[in-house]
Image (cartoon, rainbow, N blue to C red; front, side):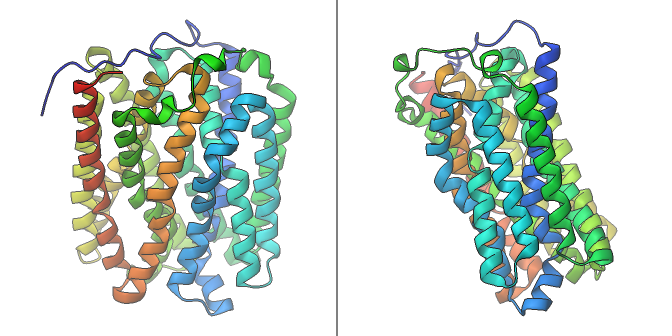
Length: 414
């Protein structure tokens, strides 16, 4: 691999010199809303078997219910993030949280498949720009040296919210029916949105910037950034498939009941969240010596996670199989930290939300949206284990993208 020094200087010096108490309060609220976001998104996976039986659905139809949210996020994240950059990130976050929470409630009230699909699409509209806008607020409230670990911690709220959603959803569904989890999660989101509205202040989080000095096209003109975006999306392809289908995999392959399957899946997703944070910390430490080491880390994570997950899902059911899959899951989303740090460093600070919107678009269009659908399609053809094994190949393509990004940046530094 080429170890020519990589220029990563554009956004290195932005942000406060030290973390503040107010910044940590805002971080906690934004993390809470990230949990709400993914609880609303992934609770459905825990009740797939019950919904499938009641409405007589096949796996591809279930996969569409899982894919419609990231599809809407991918389509709308860029324009909505641009609006938030221009007209207020705090107001945007409050509005989005209220919308996805109301839509979650509508999922619990759905009378048929089409109504559920429409409500799920509305959740996607509400969540579309949250990842990019929330991350832009966090990046602006903390020192640059903390970027990778904060990015990874924020993004880890996704699988952690999924953990809560699938475990809580399965447990409540067994006791009170599959509709009850949606109602509880909706209430949680609305409460957090009101708290954020009461505490967050736009002027303290996003001081005015000279937007005219930062053309929007700058987030797309760098070929290195384009490869980073694509690599990030392809790496998260397997995460989308795992989050949607692990409860069903435990239900079918390990023959666990719905509540136990949700709890077992939650353990794997929790391991994935832990891996995101720890890989983010490692990325920050490596980046202090050479920004190019972040690329090396991302490439290694892609190759290793693909091998572990691919082998794991082809093994017979056993404790060893679960250990191998757990190890793969630990690494599967670890690239979020390096990616967030690299994008922040290569982007003008006035366009952080727009740049992270581009990351979110790539994550959803190339990863989180097609992952659940393709896994469901393959499961109808050859079983859920084979489907997840095939989907585990996507991180290899991600690793190739990160290799190309490093080469382009070394040859044509920003």
